[in-house]
Image (spheres, rainbow, N blue to C red):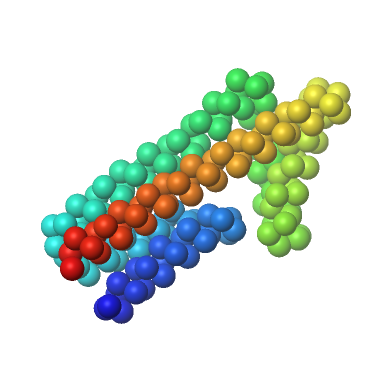
Length: 160
């Protein structure tokens, strides 16, 4: 196997791993791996695989933000509560690496919802909805990355 193909495979693996442990732009790294392979391979088949993978990634990125936000809007969780979660997640990531990302998000949404609703139980319900939306978002991006990797593997088989 050629070194560029191995490097592309490592990039795809790291991209998927970056989605499971959310510290890297996983789907983007996965796409970059397929692009590297297609560029090196240079065949019509390789570029077709890359083109299809771009479509899959774009659909994944769209759904990753659209579906969870839609469910949160329907549940009545306002954008500023989600923003508070994102801000505290970013702060938490640097205070307590990795774990702080999740703890900060939970704390941010809960605090914003508690201030808005003045009801701890309702604030916790909103926070659980936000957590479900984040998990769904990660799952959608992970599914897209796995499909992209399967396309790449099929491209390897078709170009050999």
